[in-house]
Length: 563
Image (cartoon, rainbow, N blue to C red; front, side, top):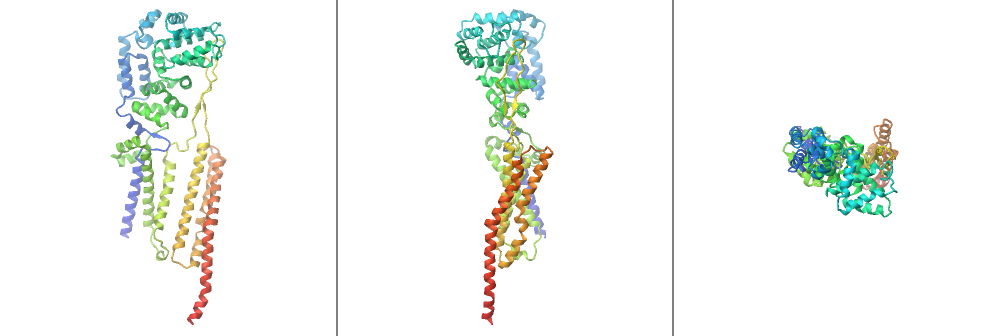
């Protein structure tokens, strides 16, 4: 008795330790753990450090947006950063006008002397250029430039076949002129990645081609300029490589204007606007909150999350308990999950299986042995049964503990349809369309029911093999097979229960409706049970029946020979 309890405690402790150790590994199937982002961001510039670098370069405008992001995320050092931003603005009042040193623009737009003198922050650059004197000064500045690309851009003011913006020569053509002036100022700054593409589109438009693509760039710049000052806008678009990325980023900012500091900070800190756009369009609901949380991990953390293109997962309560239980494994596990993600995930699954194996062994040891078990015992069967339980334990634990395992698609599409009225301001864009598909959930449900039915099927095969190998007469084996009828029908029971529970959850609105996923439970049950009884159980029973009849026919002959 004492020995049995010792084995029970030992197996239980080993099983729980394996499960807790697996929970401490920050590796997931469809998510990236915040611990991995912290490890990836180690030694890379943080958001506050990046903002201080902008201040050292006198980039006051970008630093202000970075400060807002740091304040919204309550990052360490934000108070010192705020004091530095205000100090730079007080020491160099002219930086308030453009957000960074711009001696050429200062000489042209002399009317902004008043804005600096009154110590007010300037408004968005689009609103600044909408003033008639400012727009005239900007166009004159571009006309005086000898650069061919600027002359090509100004030539677009003569277009009359525009589709999205009223032509420059019309009564409401001010928006077109402002867009041309803003785009030209970006090109003149020689820090605009799309400068060559704009020139090509401008040339094609003047040669009679359609103007939608060029006008879409204008619209996007106008929209961003309504929300940023000059330094912020030029810093934001400097690394955007193509018009489609610009269009999608603009649509994202337009639909979530309050999150502009987060989006700007992510683009500025990572230097990867294409990856930021891809992430935000892939995860329409969770992308922005996850991107905001990743800023605390620094540039390396943001880049790691963008590279993996998965939602962000924070440690669960069980994960916190696991880290308290094994505090020394935190850094080691995060390092493993960062450098070798697949190996860490495989190790986590192996530990779950090992934990299930030891827990099954603990239950087996605890069950008292009966006198007749010695006649039914088959060597090695208990090992296979515990391994089967470990596989089922792995499936259940992954289903309960893995974040976003059944998450629907969050893919976002931004319609190209954006038009301006003939008079007035820029029209509001259509809302982004978040496509939610049931395919991921349905496939996951199908896979879950299939795996559960396969585990029950394997358990029935083990019981069949155990009875076949027992040292008993055929008729006794037939009786034992009859005694296991409920086990052999367990697949049907599970199938019916799965379908009923699915329909109940659908009616309560807990899960999305999917009749295919609901009825697949019963379908798999019928298929697996039928296959087992036809191809496995029936041949064994036939063999045992023939063997039993053969022994029965030989029994009278043996008795006659003895007498």
